[in-house]
Image (cartoon, rainbow, N blue to C red):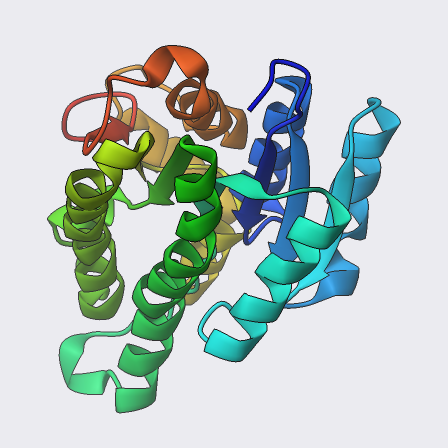
Length: 253
């Protein structure tokens, strides 16, 4: 790849929250960005923000748990922006409940998006990375990987992503591809708002209570995660692979 070739990134779950912030940050870093989400129309704002700043972006609709849709989406990105050599597996859902109330559908949905989705996306994109002799995969885990009440499915999926990341690092390293994992702590987002609603807490009260437990004494912002993704994707991080970075404002936040 020549110095003048613009690298192309795919950010799943890119329509809002961490995904949209990551898309904007990677575009600011000089990458063309495919914003992929279940609803292509929901990606409009994220794409517009990138383009307004002078970047190149493409909205792509796909269910990451569907192999055919994933294959078609990656082909569309390659045709529209160029061969993708950066993948950020951010797409995620929650179906929180205590174990005895959790349905099989709750379990399967979370596993499908987080684990199957990350597997399908990585499998589809890695061939472009191998052909280029360069690639970056960043998987989004969570501090919930350490265990969290009411999240047996989500915690399991997020822990699984850490093992998946380490295995990708081993398998793909010789092809110039790194794989790393970011585990966010409490981040102000639509997903954490949904958690507050689920447990019946006022949002501002909930944020204040969570922030009080964090050593840096504030809630995380989506930009905090985007900055970490930017590092892992950078040229300078080529000797960093198979790592799990907890971006949580403290060691146990």
